[in-house]
Image 1 (cartoon, rainbow, N blue to C red):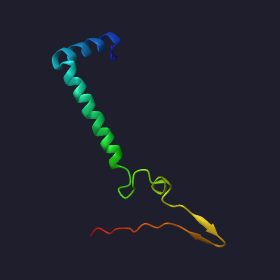
Image 2 (cartoon, one colour; image 1 turned 120 degrees about the vertical axis):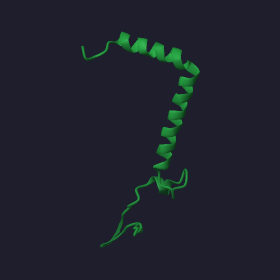
Image 3 (tube, helix red, strand yellow; image 1 turned 180 degrees about the horizontal axis):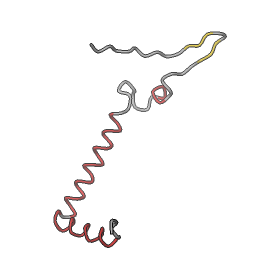
Image 4 (cartoon, helix red, strand yellow; image 1 turned 30 degrees about the vertical axis):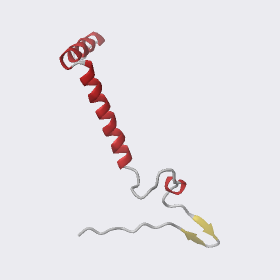
Length: 80
């Protein structure tokens, strides 16, 4: 009683397509896809250049030479 069958969902889909039209639904889908793509690109490192192999590497690469370890450090910004 609490779950819907596939037929219920198909009827709902047909009603939504009749109300909004397939073109509008397609536009909403492409807008949503563009928003997700923009969000993913926004989550990338803003200082990284496209195609830069150093930007794709780990930000904390470690190279051991003898007893010392060289690491790449980032400055921590203080917001007061």
